[in-house]
Image (cartoon, rainbow, N blue to C red; front, side):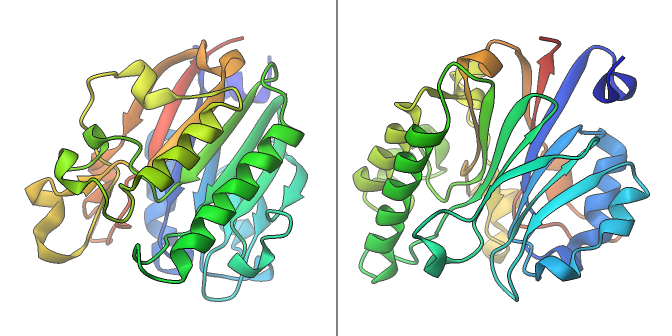
Length: 270
């Protein structure tokens, strides 16, 4: 019996979460891990250097970590029940945008965690650089991940793929996260042989994964679905459930949540 099956007999649970600063969120993240018992998790926006990652704390919960960190900004990691083999840390030729990609193989699954650039605003210099980063990502995926292999691309994409993924609906079209240019880059990733687990499993879903801390956005339902799980058909056909875990966007045991909710998918045994 494999490591994952000892945790949950009927399925494997994979997850993604922008934690918005791991130092500030460590106790909260551990609370979620204990409650939901995922088997492999992509974390984004660590805001700490690789050497500062709290490996011991996660080891107490049965996880080993692969980390690509950066001081104060960005940073990604993968937590898993068994050691992962790192394939790539950082998107080649996009190092100026920071530690935003970590590609590992764990238990036969190619697992890539992404913290995609924000862009700041459509008229900011960072916006065309965001588009260039996505172009580089699509090129890297096409060159390195075969569509007939079990693979996932999870993370904070900073794109709402369609009007249904924004509280603004079609009224948001043209704004940051909602532009045709950004959505075309997202479609280019799908064209590499990937599907959006949430939208495939819940075609009429209107759940969001990010809400601004300001203005009571969470309670008013003013959110976006930008934390996404994409997978090849070899993984997508195994998906039995996809959950945006709203309860863990709320305070828990007096601890403040990230502005992003964790997202997880359950996969039946291959």
